[in-house]
Image 1 (cartoon, one colour):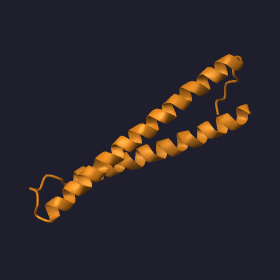
Image 2: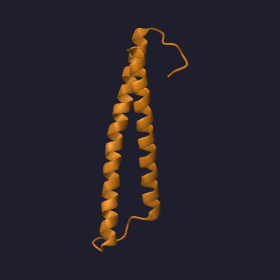
Image 3: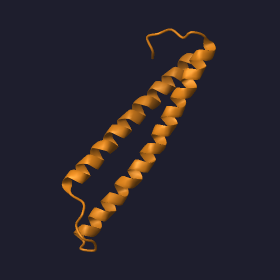
Image 4: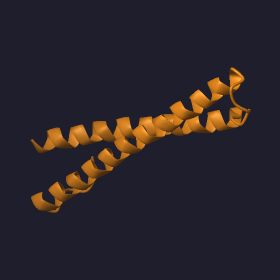
Length: 90
């Protein structure tokens, strides 16, 4: 957790609640981003089948994939840190 000791119980609880809000936001952002990834992949499949004109490039797919990996890693890390903070409080 943090290298600084909590000022008091109320301040530590407030920090924990703020961190919980960040984790929830990050989770929803992941859902939105992964939905976007699915839409791009469906577009790519349509292009390969000849049902749509080519617009998706390899660099676009690489960028979207890199963002998805970074978001998922951040969410997993934040979730584990939050679980550790909750268990330390109880």
